[in-house]
Length: 86
View 1 (cartoon, rainbow, N blue to C red):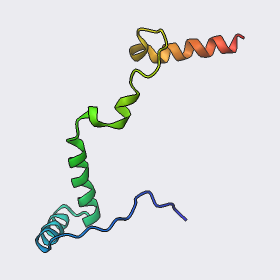
View 2 (view 1 turned 90 degrees about the vertical axis):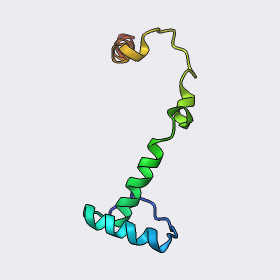
View 3 (view 1 turned 30 degrees about the vertical axis):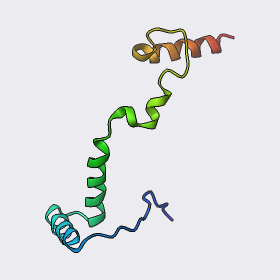
């Protein structure tokens, strides 16, 4: 059995909202749920990146490497080679 990747929620809409969304969903040939998810994504996209909790991990550690952001692949390969030669 496939696992559910979306979480069900219950939302109470005003009748005019419900009717307008149903018409728009029909026009777009998508489900009402898909239309609501798209609306939520538009709203979430307006949140400044600095408000994202993941933003707080930047700068938590120090590697001593000044170009880690631009040469991360090369640094990983170098470290793996060092480990293989031990």
